[in-house]
Image (cartoon, rainbow, N blue to C red; front, top):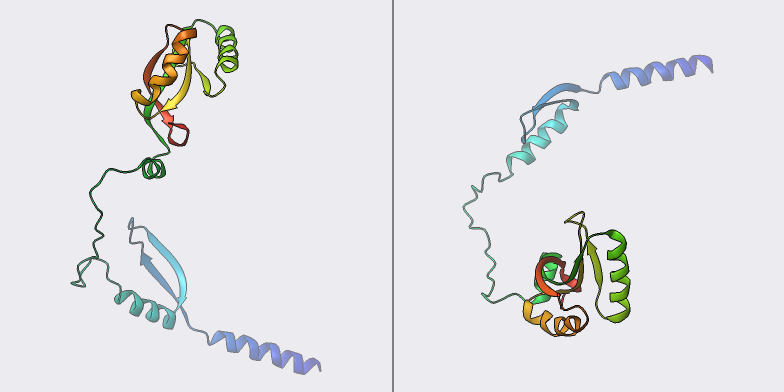
Length: 168
């Protein structure tokens, strides 16, 4: 039994000894760096055959298929699909000098105008802008601006980046 096990181990070692692997150095096609790996000669030949059939430079003579698109203005949903954030407009309610004052006016505004989303913009620090709504154009903001001006006379429409799905 012991001799049989030794014979099996020796036969296994010699059978693996017959496997042919060679050391192949390939160049990466993107940056030219060298990649080194062990690969069976037959597998390497098969890969080179497949790579030889690849069309890398458009030399096949076939013209690529062109997709024709009708020239028309994009709908709002198509614009939103391409660009989630676009240049639109917001109503600038007021500009205040402190964060506490901005928070107070924001909460008052939310209570007065529940249909408009309000936000604080701290880009003018130490001053804060209180902004409301999101609109595609000045005309679409005109109706809400008229209502806001009754309470906040200094309100105005300003260009601002808006999320497309929130705009009207």
